Image 1 (cartoon, rainbow, N blue to C red):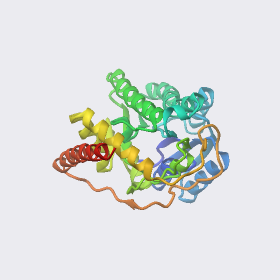
Image 2: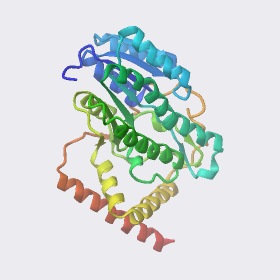
Image 3: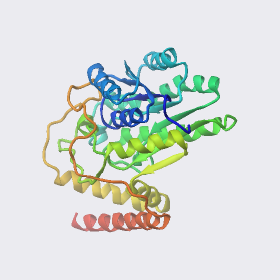
Image 4: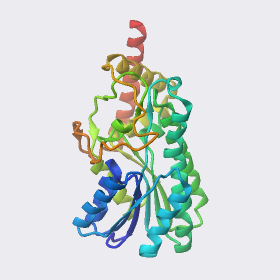
Length: 326
């Protein structure tokens, strides 16, 4: 798309965080938004902010685990505008803590929201793309789609699944050169998402950061509308994690595990919670949560490779130190 003015963009998970930031970013370019999320009031608030920027915006309360609801979201876009130019599968949630500490039903809801919700979105968008002979499908992945995420095993399973699904779907569509399928892999992002996650660890979820801004991720998605790419990392830690795990998966896995266990030991006690995994909560309706953030710069290929090697060596050294300390 050379111009985003009047482009029709569907975004799920648009009531807060990256979804809301992306809606506002497209609104500033004059796109027409069709927004979905479980929470009706925060979703309408996002749509209202988009309208204040001069864009058309329609709020359609949608639970992405409900296939019928996602199909209705797509049909709302077609009924209102006749086409869908870009569909952004953005919903993401997780359960933090040892896998066996959470009911399997709660773990299944993570898979249903993240992975099955992405499948539902693709199933809703692709028939229209094929009819139009064009369209961009963007799936939200994570640096957790490239390397393990200890103490968030079902989240990692969903993200690995999204990456595999996206790559496979891309190959199925090679005969349709104007239909593009992209995946976005951000590092840690400052959104209400951590507060919305379930936590069965008994410890506070408080990563040291620094964090990306959701606006930085939103700009990447906007860029994919103009120039689609297969896989896009946001923030050098995401690329470094990919390089490290690709070069030496065993060493990287042990290092990541040691770092996560050490972080859990240092974390302050906190109440166990199902967060917003099982049902929506009223808190966390903005784009950010207020953590310290840093801005994305464009590192060279050499610096990314060095970053990956540095992460790999640092992880192995940390694993050795923590092992010796017992």
